Length: 287
Image 1 (spheres, rainbow, N blue to C red):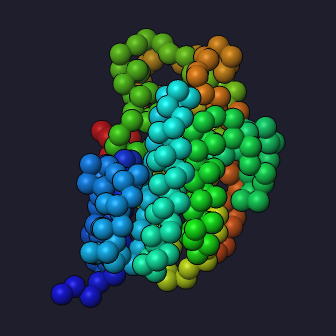
Image 2: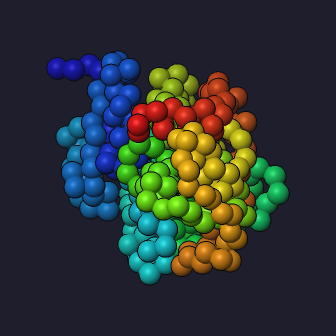
């Protein structure tokens, strides 16, 4: 009979879930259980309850989310079911079984009109269905489980799944020139760094509930990000800066989504990681 503490990870086939799986062997003191959407669709509440009844995990890292930002504009009910309602149920079940919950949220809870990095206390004002559903999920999590930790992150990429870095690599290999939006600024987050931070928080055994912000360090535009990918891969593709207005999308994107990370750094002694160093590591792994 294993006496290890159990960490349950939902949404394990996503970028963050897969990066957590990569770290499993570095944290042998825990027993990890990875559940994909197929294994445990989080909006099937009876399945969720039954799983907890049989398993009694000490920790739950919820990486499951509806993340199709543009599609959410027409699939509002589904976005809210997965990103909000299911999170509330999950938080309540965690409270019932004394399971510590870490839930992942997003910069999209803000309207993107700020001129300095968003603190955790900054007023929220989502401009898209996705952002609104994620904000409701935060509220549900803390309402049903005030002991939860919520980590807002932004511009997530990794070797896995669909993301900006992989899209750029593909386009740069297929085209002579591409256009990239230059008037939306933020800080990228390498999912491997976020995964490490989450497991550092758990293994520190210092649980401080509430909302935290985490991303890599530095402020860039999507255009700057693309240029860095081009430089680091020695691509000959020409990159043209364009405005958001020239690239309309169904869902509105925040023009400014830089997150202030001082709270998580001081609470859990998390070191800063520069976005370009992390990008370089990811590109090495991809190549």
